[in-house]
Length: 384
Ligand code: V47
Ligand code: SF4
Image: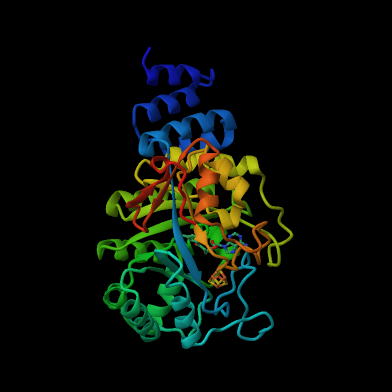
């Protein structure tokens, strides 16, 4: 019996549909949306873990990726009103709002220059004053003193607003920002694409069609991006599969998504606080099914500031191969939403230990997943 055959016999459940799904995945055939839904409804956690781990191993062996990064959140004032958001403040109610000046933003970036980081992740509330010309100048100023800092900036929600206000097409807007220094795009703002849910949780921001068109345009212009899914609130399994299906379809056309990041809804201090957070079992299933379903997205990320480091570590055995970065206590989105990580920061040493103690190889990557250093070849001489 070869390895695939023995795995297949190990995964035999007596449920014909699950057995067929395992067979297809092992033979590298694509599973369809009904099969993904069936896994959500019928597969055990142990079965999902074994299959997702097999798929992850086929993509990346024992490697788990991380990077050295920091966030810049220039403001939490936002013109939109997402019901799940604990972080934003409206222009009418300003307590707990912040709005950095241009110089404060630039000085914050400069303060990281000697901190051994490779990426800045910029995201925040959608603010009319922080418009296209503002960020063209900002990117140029960053690149003038730090040319090789990778700028990963703004969700599709921010771009839709910024380009609409500047009266430019998505293509024109991206061309200007790329020229100024934009390097890639994070995956936020996707939430749940299905209109039945989107209408209830974030009715006034960019639509699913706009989110997808913005990423399609970015990919066409050579930018890579990520994709997220906000799960564990009022959506059901069907909505999750529908969401992943639209992403898989776009990825077939462009190949521009680097990673998929399921984001667990955290329920503190927002208008959906009455909804209980979903279980760890549901987290594990969602990540594993994502790994099994996306045969065309290379990486599945467990974003540790949102999940907490222990859950992120557990998910390494359920299809996850990336846990994001060092962060250095520079994001408030999840601490304000009730994450156990109230001041998210991990040294390189801590991240490497977290990965290695789960039996994997820690690999520092750049923002586009080029390997910088494989720590399993390093005799434990970490760089903090
Ligand atoms: O779009 C907001 C989510 C996203 C809550 O691309 C919440 O590498 C859970 O997308 N509970 C923005 N989630 C952040 C984001 C992101 C984060 C890290 C890495 C990357 C990447 C992207 O945060 C929003 C929304 O889906 N969010 N509030 C909440 N209460
Ligand atoms: Fe604004 Fe983003 Fe919060 Fe929505 S999720 S209210 S767009 S900051």
